[in-house]
Image (cartoon, rainbow, N blue to C red):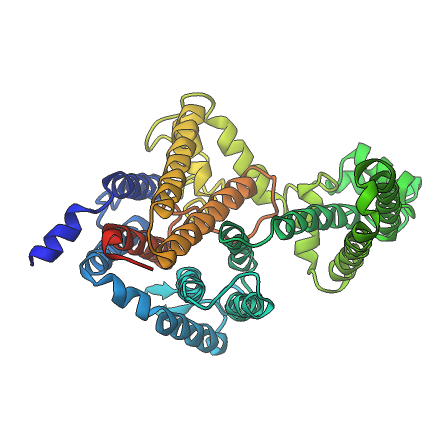
Length: 465
């Protein structure tokens, strides 16, 4: 009992308070966005806010159990948790589809999404593997094992399909970088991302020829703007595929090689050639792969969302409906917002913004609290992430540090992508805003990550490796 009290006294209070602040703010926003005047009590279990309150209680109870556990038990159970979640990911694939995806276990009026738990389970498995004494990140075998640990749940999630959760798995590259992987790999990954975006951008233009005779008819349908149709008409053929971009990258690579040869590394030009050649060829292969995927893998709705994001297409009544409605709700909040329970666009009554309690809950917050409220929310999230990084850095145990950075990376990706999606800077994909979006699996998963980190940090003085 004395030992348990001692551990509880060592819990990082700032992180815990910020966690409860975010969870409370999220609960109030869900209450406001789905408010029903016939059921005003926040504990009404049949309403979204009642269910969210229930899951918050469950999360707090499980968090309390985690805080009372021995930290060594958490570490030793890493592979077990990882394996159990993998089993859930396999079983859910044979479940009846919900909204076209096999991602949920239906439990009466509740549903459970195992892909949410795969994030902290993978983080635990990575931390446990990398904390072994004989593991060196520079070894090819270690890198291959880490890729497998990440790729197995990622592949199962892709089969559901759940593109949003799959995208979050790329956040682990920041953890690898912190633990000593070459900065060149991170740079290559970022360049690959930039090239992929450019490839999708080029592919987003219509490939079919558009003649001037039917432009007015197409504009009347409301699918595109007049200026964009004229650009497409002039550019048809030039943007017919991504090979133009591939040729451009080849030329840039060649010029870069010449510049390096004569001005940058004249003494080491021979050893530098392979890196330039590999990078150029890799960039071209990425472009070709993106072009093929855009035509043969992406579905019509995916292509349409990319076109809307890049401004190539306007579809206010179709695939672009969510974005335009979300932007109008955010803008209506202006500087100070309309006030709690006074939103008129992002609530259940008017249904102006679809999914206003889940993926687009940022709209509800923005409408009610305005620019000032958004600033407070963003500062709180940034402070929350910085605190997690600070906790990770002060750990004596390698396992604790790696898990801490994994938590920070996962939350950062969720926060960044969700906000970018809502304001139109990223395509619409299903990814929740941590501690805000409605969903039992989401709040439970994020809470478990935070409470595990709090428990590991509270016992850091006892940890030697």
